[in-house]
Image (cartoon, rainbow, N blue to C red; front, side, top):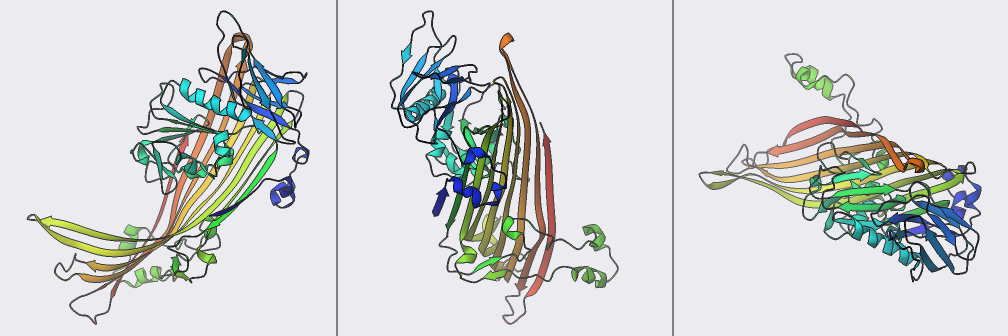
Length: 525
């Protein structure tokens, strides 16, 4: 796998997404950003963050976050103080020109006698790592915490790859989570505190490869139940928290490619479709005829087969797979990811922030497997069928994420977050073997082909707000969420030829089945 990661402001002129640009993209000052939490893993608002020896300083907002402009190229010492907590200093922090350093800090509650506590550290990076270790140590349940600092230092592109690094977890098919040996249906996913439905209409599971790694603020994998959270799981509860307001304007581009030794240099087959197959969407090419009756009506049409044959002739004349030759480009894997964000001050105390991401991933696979079914009569086994299969699949994952946050002063915040994802598989199955259903002694020879495009669309939108009322020492959090899950299998085709083994020169008799399936689910919270 080769990947190119570009982080440069010159990309503003190399992509159409830079039609809307901001002055902050071209001129940025050095900054320190992060979060302040207490020993109970609660985010602290109103905490003072200052630079020793300088007059500059700031305070944390309702989420315990802060952004502090600092001079570059010289070591600094940060002092953090809050009423009821021990004062903390972090020395030797160096920030490069135009860069942003992340600093997450845990404050200890003060005893009866307040004393200064000086933390000897090598800088912000070590302090941030220590903060996440303290978060995991102080949590009231068994949990694994992954910080944005750890994610940024890894080569992972999405949450599915991140979860592979967690002890006790594994990933199937690159997206389905298995926790401590329990299958994917025993897990539950949450995004920004909101429960998510399954991403598969016909099974309880969640595809964790739909979140770009650059959009993740932190992830928490709970392996024991928590009273205040959902208990609809037995393996693990995965909490994914996306970023709200970026500390600085940014834009990232990743382009990757690769190949599978099972497909490269070999023949590859796909279901012939329309111009949007590369995106995992059928453009109507596979739509069934509009005049086609229901199954019961079709069986009752006329006393002859003439009218039924007339309906059959309305289908597209596609009864074989499209063969891609052994050229390199048709079967090479492709990936693309574009992400960006901005932080704009709209007034003295109000800020508007946004984060967006576009992802695309296409993988080609070829799988050989065997299907054999036995039945027992009088404790003696007999073969029902014995098939050899070659499955060629082109998997497409395309999605977009957009978060918009309006921060009103230090005590109020309203967020609007959206996620849309298309997860599709265009596959062809070629089958040979014997069928013993009608001829139990010799078995009929078969040749079969299956042509299928299965496209799943997942959409989630959230509107939430956080409000802090210092006068009455109270906080308010509210949210609303809406999910759509849709599965579309247009014009699935199965073609099977059977030959009588008693007559070697006998022709194969064809059996054709065509179906269309669509499933949709809605969820309000």
